[in-house]
Length: 331
Length: 308
Image (cartoon, rainbow over all chains, first blue to last red; front, side, top):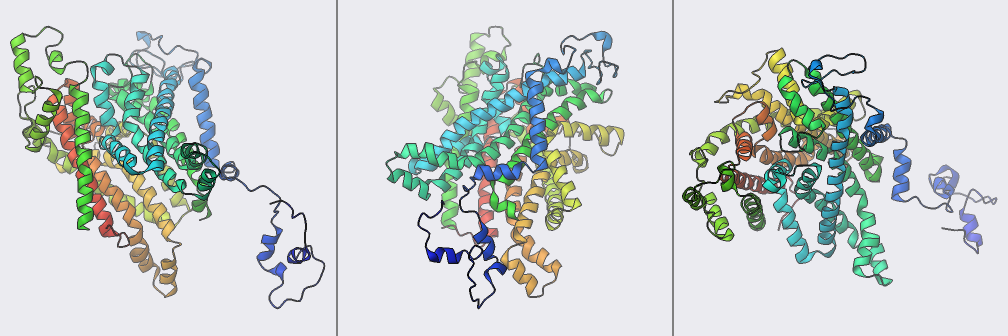
């Protein structure tokens, strides 16, 4: 909305504030009505996009700031654990078995004499790796399936939607247990087998959300316009439909990242997730289980770290949902 | 309505076949032989192996195996566990326990979830609302097995208010603590759902009309707002009952509840493939039927929704 190059008299008159002529009013003067506020809007400024608007809202929200700071800390700890813990998590001495806290070892020792604080710090990486790569995996598979089903509709939609229902009929944990028990998975256990098992049963949720968002946008005017301008159907999906469908997908992805971290810990806790030699919160909680009555701290601290990490991703998703849905915000 | 029921029912058929096929394929058709694993690494006598393969139909082509499995599933002829018990009888013993647990967890979710959600939704932004919101976030973030351990330790062992583990017959009173743990996460979702739904309906036109024509606040809330807000909550609870009836592997494991989840987990750990596919097959049927019931319930509750 730039300045009209040939401003005519009527237009000047309409802008009550700048006009010096006195107009006889039979209703309330323009300045006293809410219409004045509309006239005061700066028409030359660029309209805010959904994302810019969301950002303006987000940076004032304490929930968002806290969760982003927490997630940053978790990332730094996962990448550089040696900066935070000076004791190796695997140099354990049975002489320290189940000892309490002492200087240099703020959280005490496990039954095997390992430093609890150091294990909590070094366990961050496994949980975060599983969470992030599982989320990327479900975004790729679920995103492609959902976008194709929603955009093209018809038979493709029916087949892909039923396929998603088939995987949805088995709960995430149950499906992952079955997959992880397959000999080829059981004998090569690592972070990646857990990621693959969770992706196989986790993608339908993202597919459903993507499908819904794409259906909402596929008949929008800007998509019709882009096709009228000669864009192919598929290019319109990539360039216009998908970018406009991202908001709900990002919200769900952020929340499910937290649930995938919990799922990994649950699988490790059940003894069929990460290999027992890996240092992870789930493994440590499972190992602490027999001693929980004598030495509850060994179970408590990895659980606290896990919960704070999951909580920060869920809070981030919550804050993003509020910011990206202007309708919900005004209430 | 009849047509809709029929159509939804028809849509469930491919889901049922797909999910059972998926599980059967994962357990029996992937590399690594459940029969070879039985003898624990030593070579098995060929005659014994033959007999075992014939017993589980593993000597047939894959599609025939799957067909026989489906036939057995539908006729509830589920075969035997490796220790010689009838799988149908084992499931028959475990299911009432899981059902008791699920009903109690659901009642806990429904009563406290709706109560807290309504109060929070009516007083949005106040102290109670904030406390409930933060509390529900924490409950969602803490894994079930941690919640289970902490409650088992504090309530069961230190305070001695409840038995820390459930005995073999699993009477109602011993299942209260496990049901509490099982229902806590869904409780948080019910609270958030109710709260959002209430606060959305508070600004609806029909509520303003009801207030304007002089109805008491109690009547506006209890009759007008609540009734319209509970539809998504009831749907969630219905879907949750379907999930809970599938057994809670983690909760049942912690409290040693002899239910379906525990049975399934033990079977998976022992590599009892026949039991696993039988139990999972039944769980898929339960889940699929529960979803159908929820869909129909949705249409019954909200007269604005017309299925043709």
